Image (cartoon, rainbow, N blue to C red):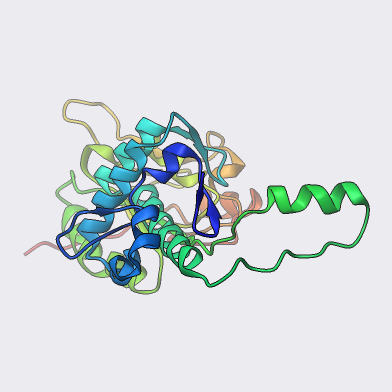
Length: 279
């Protein structure tokens, strides 16, 4: 379906690309008919309106699969849930959709179509590439810092809360995406998928430890704490190309060097026990 200088699939032509002053949907056809409707560019809308506009656009999409550089694959329903819950993935989807809508509006109002790019080389490549290459977008990908903070132990809880209030915001201010495992979530089952993300570059936390392992949550009634990272148990993918710092007893002697052997960039740790005096 041709709308202005651009071609749309039928379902895509029905999707809103911005909102008017009364916060009603505006489609591509409406923008071409009345360019003044496009004064409120999507990326300038309040964020809650961007989220809703993204959800409204996704609702009109047929079923699809969405993949990322980590090898994860999401369905349409998965993506809608992430947008509603405003996870890191959900926020990236909103950002991408709004940038795409901005670009659509510019294309719709362009006085004439952009010139076709000329490709040198075999005829097959010349004919194929323009069909494959549609649009390119810059999508910000943030490095991830994973924090395993033990908030369920009387000794470590004050330190964990201080780190959550002071250290985590410092990382976010530097552009990191902070993923924090606290309370009953501070367990190895949750740690492994976070640590093995391609974007994860830093692992840290406060907890108890020994020469060979670092611990997290200690469920009530359990005989042992959950072991987040233990020599001989973890895979190299959990530490490779990452820097680690655990505020815990003893982990600096054996566990720290072991992570470096398995590909960690660096490990900051302590060989002795921390002796605390409580007022």
